[in-house]
Length: 340
Ligand code: NAD
Image 1: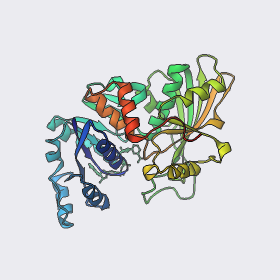
Image 2: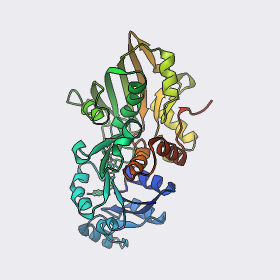
Image 3: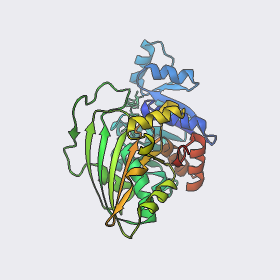
Image 4: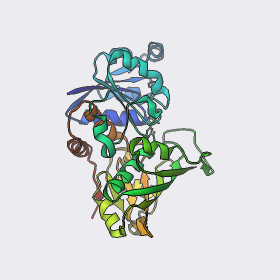
């Protein structure tokens, strides 16, 4: 049994917390927060021990008469590993605290790659995190790219890849985002290609990104030159059999990210979460040695299973296949088609 603490209880933190609580080989000892907002009350009502992140934050909780268990330092003394889910770049500020406490640590994709020994994706490099002390679970976009490109590269061989990422402006709960415009990332290539290479170093990739006014999902249009001949049918078969990838069909009316989210709601997925990549079978094609694939990434949910697998690899708990099997069973993740 590994004792886990989580710093931050926002979009990612609350999902990782729930996944840890559902897993019978790890225990959630507590979470830390900077402010007593509604999610602090929610955590407490779910039996989770809430710690103030720092001594200075205790005043915020005292003002609201919210009783905390102590500060993150107290939490650190009771755990084997901390999953830092603080906003981007804040994790780097917390690192020294974790090092002093001597715990293992997982950071998220908002941190720079050099914060950790390994940038992690369960399917692409589970074994690289084996026994490691500091791991970064890569961002939602890099996780989606890693899953798909790992399957293509290890089964067919990828000579080069090009991807255009159409990014959601912000998460649904956030209050500031792009309302009426399309905003290209002012950098070519965007940071996503180089970030993919922190996980899969030997795939040549270029990426472009644009932000659009939607909050539901990202969408990737991926174009891949293969090392050997393949067919549309082989690609569909490969994607169908790849863990954590779901295939949907536009001909069934699932033509857009909002219809996919509606399907997740109809299936009763918690918070309509889709930690799997969702790929449109209709878009999969092969022409003149190049493959074409379009898929959606539910940014709020996709890294939830990866954090659980990272905990297992870092603590040498289960092999790659065993951990992925266990995580998928615990969280109800599937691959192939969601319905017949
Ligand atoms: P969030 O803003 O929803 O939640 C952040 C949480 O951290 C809040 O509970 C906040 O109270 C707490 N916090 C604030 N400052 C802190 C500090 N200094 N130390 C500890 N905790 C602090 O953020 P999020 O969307 O969950 O993002 C967390 C990380 O996950 C970032 O690195 C982000 O890039 C990455 N990520 C986000 C998404 C996404 O779509 N939201 C997807 C993948 C990865």
